Each structure stands twice: as C-alpha cells, then as structure tokens.
Image 1 (cartoon, rainbow, N blue to C red):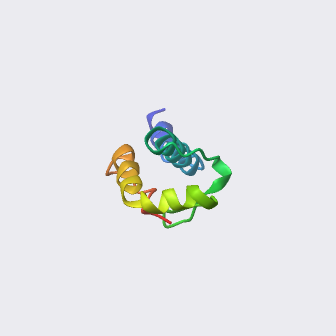
Image 2: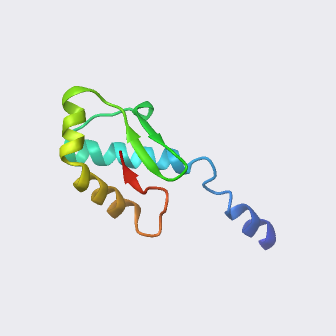
Image 3: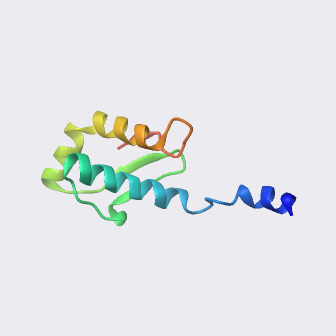
Amino acid sequence: MKDITLYLEKFKEFGFKDQILKQKIIQILEEKFNISLERGNIEINREGVVTIRVSGAQNSELFINKDSIQKEIIKNLGKSDDSFTKLR
C-alpha cells in the first residue's frame, strides 16, 4: 500500500498547480493592492511566466507595483515552489 501512496504522491497537484497559483495571485492583488481580477484574466505559461490581462487604470496600477507584486507572490508561495518565475 505504501508503494501506491508514493506513486500517487507525484500526481497530487497535477493539473491544479496553475489554479492554485491563480487563486493566490487574485488573493494577493485584492488584499494588498485593491485590484479585482477573475481567473480568466490570468494566464500562466510552461515557464511560470504570469500574464495578467486588464485594461486602463488597473494595467497602470499593475505596472507601477510590478516589483512589489512579484515579491509578495514569491513570499506567499515559498522559495521551493517553482510555478512562478515572473509577472508580465
């Protein structure tokens, strides 16, 4: 039984890693920067580059706070999580 558990452990977050990252990004942006987003506005590519699609003032706000947003995401994810590399 232990062998099956070890085998299935690697599939634990399979397919959900992007969804978890999107939810954390939405949470950070709402709590720290008062920016409301939906999951559909966030895209994550294979390299972990996050693209947020918004318009107007929100786009300017994201650009101005880009560095602090990236630091906050990395802080919340932890250094061992490689699902996020940069914000675009």
